[in-house]
Image 1 (tube, rainbow, N blue to C red):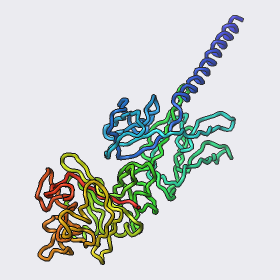
Image 2 (image 1 turned 90 degrees about the horizontal axis):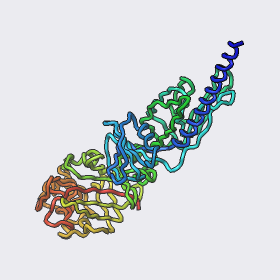
Image 3 (image 1 turned 180 degrees about the vertical axis):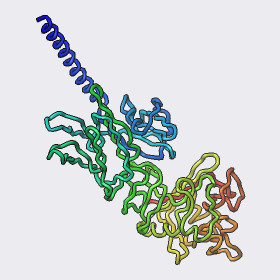
Image 4 (image 1 turned 120 degrees about the horizontal axis):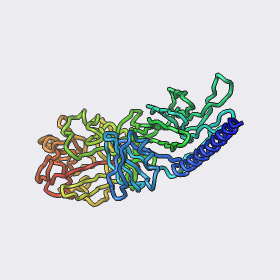
Length: 449
């Protein structure tokens, strides 16, 4: 009898402890869900944050996903992950100042939360939750490997995967992007051919999402539209989706893929056709090189005369030229109409409609009609098409350009690392700085009218 009483007392204590444990688990689940929440992030590769006015803190994490997870706490709105040092910098500002960086990943918290579906087994027990973007929480130790080519035109839909071993029992759900939810340790491989018009590449989604009886992990989703977002309809940078960051993109020129630098400004999305900033690229080139284009789109480059002609033939374009001197002062010149002819015309330039604060060095240059650029054919060191009767003007200007007798806008001239004057071969804009003062940087860019 005493044994039965002891056994009953032990059973009663065990039952109470078990009930308390269940209550504790439920409280932890509720707190974790309410505090952690479901957050969606957009990311951009090769970008880092340069402003520190709203800097919060820095932590060391193994991946960009974990960096995004850190940003779900407190008032963080953006984070910057360094893939080289594995550091995660957190910021309050949702739209901080950024610049290019090969090791940087910019993570921005999206304004809305992803919707959630419950996944249940056959007896109605909720096993896990998954966002409509397809990245789940799980109740096991599951690793999700990033996809190299996840492509879709719209947000992924979710469909069921059925266990063939026991009929129609729903084990889990998987998005059409191929990122699965998983129960226990079953892995479902994505399709090898998921391709539509718009490319969405998901990077760095490799981590362990762990849910135990007393801890619920936060859903982190990353909707990634990288700097390589390209479709057959992207003719120039104005076709890139709004809100994208400045950087290198692919455009379609006469059914050929061409890399360009897109400058996303308040006044529009500009396609950069020429850029000078540090002298790493020699612009004293021959005809074929200027025809095909040369340089590094991340640094200094020329888009190519043939690409220019084909691109400008698709629409009516305006030209903007941005200039900077060695004092850090900047000026600009815009032209409402800008066109380059075919190779049969030696890529003749037609330009009109000046505005800006740099002065007009192309149509009405300071030194008069002998330096006027409008209507001129392109000249290089090995193809003399200028108006000079005695010499090839490309030789003494050290450039390839639309040259008359000479030019007052030698934007493809020689780069000097310090300010120089009276240098006929330097990069200069005569209507801003007379005496052929060499400039620190210059860029030419176009956008449709």
